[in-house]
Length: 168
Ligand SMILES: Cc1cc2nc3c(=O)[nH]c(=O)nc-3n(C[C@H](O)[C@H](O)[C@H](O)COP(=O)(O)O)c2cc1C
Image 1 (cartoon, rainbow, N blue to C red):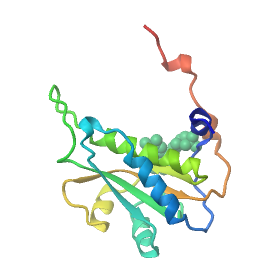
Image 2 (image 1 turned 180 degrees about the vertical axis):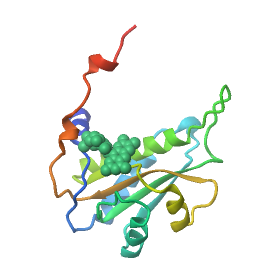
Image 3 (image 1 turned 30 degrees about the vertical axis):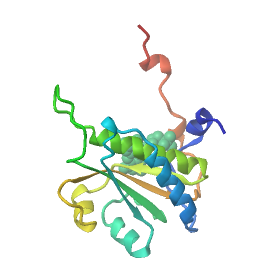
Image 4 (image 1 turned 60 degrees about the vertical axis):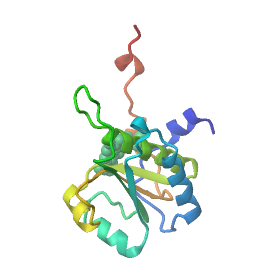
């Protein structure tokens, strides 16, 4: 499948089959994240893979949006490793972590593994439950598993290009 077709096909999945995602697939998803570009190639990302029953139980305390997924990734960045734009002090951390997460989400889609990007989590709960050091900032959680539902209507609701693209 070409990339454009895959991007159009990928949709958020909030209902999952019980069967676990094999380690070989987890490895590929992580490698896709590894290939992501980061500002100044600083690679400030840190990823927690949650796949054990105990880990999943802990994870469920951090968000209502766990959707009982059999697998989750917490994508963080290290505040001390980000690139900082000198003109205004803007940090690349959120952007770097988001590109890594997007690569992972797309690789999962290619493998037939559904995912949803979760921002609705309690940052403090993630920091405490997973003992993140003070320099580690969680940006996104990807819940994943084999889909047990079709795309929601939201997936097909996209603004027209003319609405937000301009040429100069
Ligand atoms: C930055 C970001 C944050 C999101 N946070 C959540 C979330 O906390 N819970 C949730 O169920 N979906 C969340 N989503 C999924 C979006 O609701 C979803 O991508 C959007 O409705 C389009 O649907 P689609 O992914 O099926 O195309 C998030 C997506 C993004 C990109």
